Length: 525
Image (cartoon, rainbow, N blue to C red; front, side):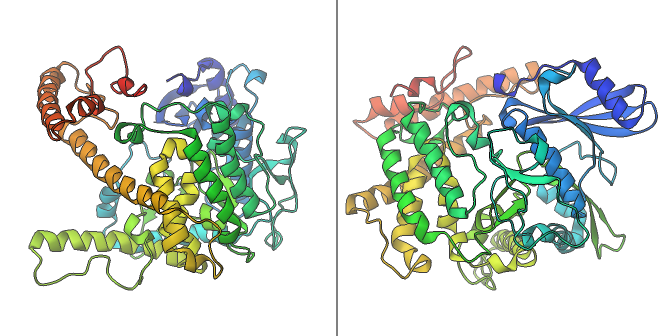
């Protein structure tokens, strides 16, 4: 909780926000987002409204995170993307009475921010026949970013905001600035990606960019994890599924897998000037970040505002340009014929099976539609296939993501998929025992994760085993029922493998505890 804690002077914040909109005072202030940032919606005595954003320590490095977000939003507005205008900001917490970094910005068009998060299915129902026009409109809005090629990889800043001693590059576009657009105030500097600054990583002397090539960027990501592991910082994570399934993390195993990956990186990284060039992209576009308006006849959709650019980076296009989470479907990420249905329909299906298949086909189709319209030149490229992209996102945090996944993706790439990456022999030769380990552990891991998730859903506890008393005393009886159910489930789990009862009793992840984490007993296993 301390990592998300921010302490600030509320009166000073209201004063700064009021000054930014030409008002005398704030009439109301309401927090509507609480994640990496604390976001507040303010209404002022002159009738104006604004959003105030305060980053938590988890958002990224001090000063750089706020400075980069402000510059990025200005950069995007100059490219005519519908991004809120920044009215005031301060990236030096010690230099203002507020006591923290902050950004005051417009609420954006369309009536301001979305205050309650909606599932995609609910919004899809409201859009009705406008689902495809919505995807088309979102793609049209983001397409300029998909087409804008950068020479360098890192984050965008104003020139004056990159601290002395840190590298930065101007003249950063491969094709020059769009006609009539002044980009002279900006440079590409160090990456504000959280994983370069998270926890102990912030203390490491590592390469945080900017980088002059995609390969340099990817190698720095792998080297970051290696330096952190070698520094003795790696400890079992209480919130890690891997810990509950196979609590056997060894640093040397991680380093060996990362060395293998570094060896193949030069062979699989594109060098065509398109896929390897940098692209600026939204870091995690959620529906609540999109304001839009549907035409009365549902024939078209207008995107009014795209918000929440905290942590945006310029990265290799084949990694950084991706489908928004609310449109993403894992089955669409697997290679195959894009014209075929994800789940073909047949006469032997029940009505329920047909409906499920139609829903699956629709979700996969929406994923593919976004790709086809937004970045058609990257569709079907081998490096963007499931195993490759998953490996790229796993190797930078193997300790957190689990070595099982990293080993599996590495084996898929070096054995099954290698001919699609290179005509030359793979420089990494996994031994038969390594291949067997990768395949057996991923199978076991998948089965066990499904088992634990089913228990969590059945008991309505979260994935770490915590019970949420969201209804106060009314949940006390429910808690007792859940507790009794878990006692019986534990007995069945322990007795499932005769002769292995002691180990299985220890691996049962849920413990009744108000003083400690429910999984703390696993750390010393």
